[in-house]
Image 1 (cartoon, rainbow, N blue to C red):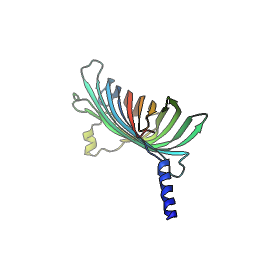
Image 2: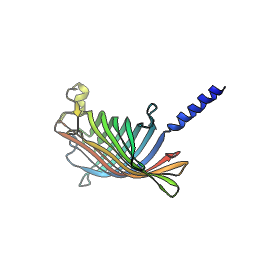
Image 3: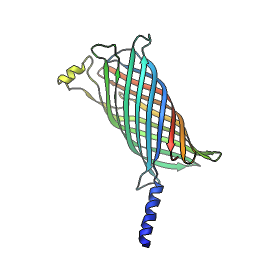
Image 4: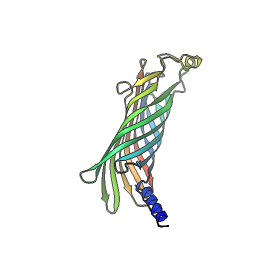
Length: 253
């Protein structure tokens, strides 16, 4: 009986030492996109996003390593410079990875590690006839890093963080210049996949935030810069948004 109780206690300790920190956010800001496949002009407007992140200490090295999963859905609604045509964008992103973490000085922490990144969606101009849509698809590896400072405001725990992901190596989709999706549907599949690196598929996802822990729950406020660029076959696609972030942290952090 004593051994069973001891096992139960140890199980509870392990569970309590590896909690999942979940953050669910609404992000609203500006968008500036271009896809030369459907238009040579930049379109500007508003972006609306729902994002989530889940972080947990890795079981074997809980004091040195964390696992992280991120997901986001973005909707863009934009106009051309003359405000005579509208573009819509819808994208989704999923990322998972592990990071090494190190505490230093007083209440500071740095993390760095790789993440698997899957990204896709579409840009759409209703008034275009032959080619109204640009399809977006990319899969690869990101380099992630963060810097955090932990302090207190009164009796509340506060965490100020700068978290960044850089898409580094990937494979992304791009048709040939002037190639329609109908031609691809008929079987012209050559030259659609391209190796991506910082020279032709640069991106950055940077979140600067402050998190306040109220005990039973917490909140996050911050600013996000999200940029994706793809260049291939004399075509360029770029999606950029600057957003204010407001989030909730169930059970705190």
